[in-house]
Image (cartoon, rainbow, N blue to C red; front, side):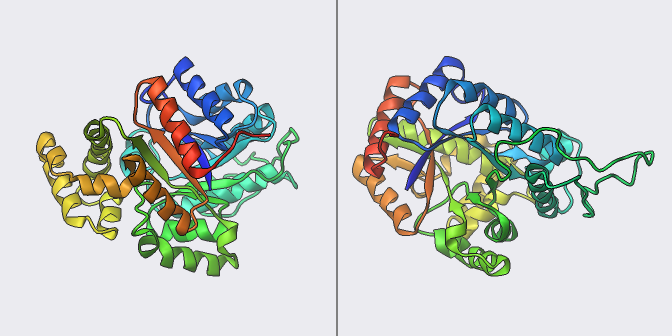
Length: 353
């Protein structure tokens, strides 16, 4: 099983020399990848381009580039550029964001988000393949656009990518989106996963996607994101995880639409999710935080004693997860590095040759 480091949102998580030190440390430890996120602050492209010349072997993953943030051509251009700057180490990661961010921040309607994402991936792959001028007949991204002044022209990327196929991952948790990942994507990044309920939550949808795409499990790299804290002040560490759960269950959506609440129902904590969301949206944030049990933290993170963390890692290995993308909870760089060293030892990754 491979390991990735999740830097998260630049400016909220590690940044500057602190982030670079963490990335170089895991590169030396044998982590295969580092991943960067975007929401409505820092962007993925800038951070990965900054990391490219300051690293040597580690893969540079987008987790995720939001589909409403840029046209597919802009995403493809950024991807082939970072791939060239890094010597072929870039990994695309896409997702549709959510209705609040898509419509409120980017001004992009949120109808049929995964239909849009499918078309987006198709166009990005066409551009990177560079087999000819790019046209597309889909309803979401017709190329050339029929809505302009009639002078649009099908174009071909005017540089030669160093790779004509760059892996495409998606961040997905819904039933149909996970099915699409299994059908057409190179990798899948689930959030808030529980190894005990992983296959009962997603197995059916993965299987349907593999069948639809004529593919097998070996065609998809599964890389859940997890917060990690080993030993030390576990109450404080669980508090950090709860802060994230509070934001996603309470604030990432409305009473009508919250994908994370729906997901939490599917792995056995539905009553908790409903209570946390209701309290949060009623402005009772302290009560919402207090309603989060340690059991939910333990189910969705790698926080605990060394034996507890080893046990959870073993469960992910048993279900065939390909990579764990981890976010160390410790703000202190020395403690964070020690945690990552212990994790590398548990998983058995070695320094690159």
